[in-house]
Image 1 (cartoon, rainbow, N blue to C red):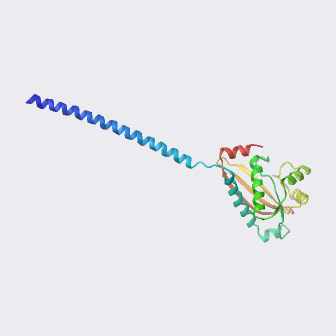
Image 2 (spheres, helix red, strand yellow):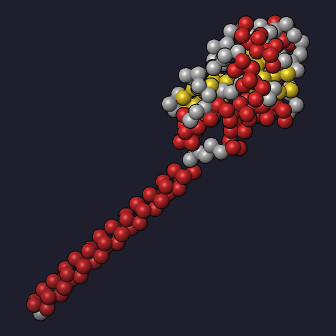
Image 3 (cartoon, one colour):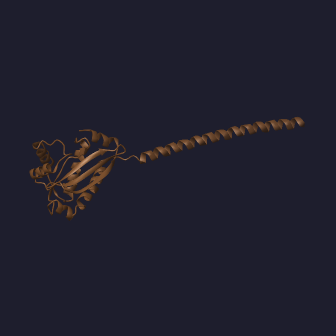
Length: 209
């Protein structure tokens, strides 16, 4: 009888050890599944935060900027510029901080021109005409135009004002600054800026000349 009880006790201990082993395996498998699920969830979240700088992205930014520039021009600013109305404007290619014109600069200035025409704000001088007058006046960069030069360009282009833009890589994003300037005396009629995400495509466009 004593042997039977001992044998039963040993059998129970073996069964207990077997159950413990099964429980440990189940826990490990559950933890593994949870880890995989978390990794998949994080991967999904990472995809969601990726921003693609496509044409619609830039167009939205430029349209908001154009509205801000035009609608913030006051009568006082026009009077200070020696006029009461702006009829015809010239949009210069946006320059990088080093004074060079990148593909991104040409693209953004082109979109600005399109928006001005689309919303019927002003008449816009054609880009080819602008480049021709700049060449005649031996102007390589529009970054440091003085009042006298602006006045001369304004007369050559029959333009009442200029849109000058500058692109600056800040490391975390790319800053676009645009000024709306009278061609008569260099008076700044309005100024505005916006940021674009520093994606690989935006950097490539900014670094290609």
